[in-house]
Image (cartoon, rainbow, N blue to C red; front, side):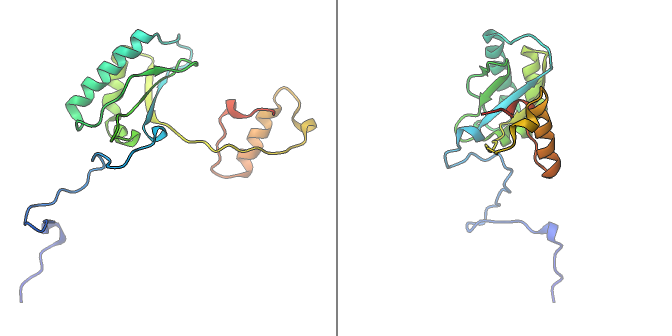
Length: 170
């Protein structure tokens, strides 16, 4: 009777006998990835001046150069954009998702900081659900009324986070 090999000694092979590579999460997607799952946002330090377009262009170049050294060929960015609030964002090229970029977070931040020292973090885009609720206006008509409403909703619903700027009267 032959002794069984430990699990770590087994290799996965294909039908033709070649070793099968384990998935890394960085393989190009064969399906179209929606724009919102490809969006990447660069957080900047609070109170810094607005970014100018030349800095955004150089940040794109620095990031793609850094990615070319550590990431597969399909993990690259398109042109960087500046939001009305001064935030820097980009979209992953077709075949790559924002989650793939987070494998190289350290390299992304270091490269983007070469263009602008105010960049402190890189995150994937988040999708937010829209919720309309009917509440008594008198209770929340004070100056900080919406902040109180936001705190009450978050306190009564575990795991719910409402960004301060997203509560508004309709």
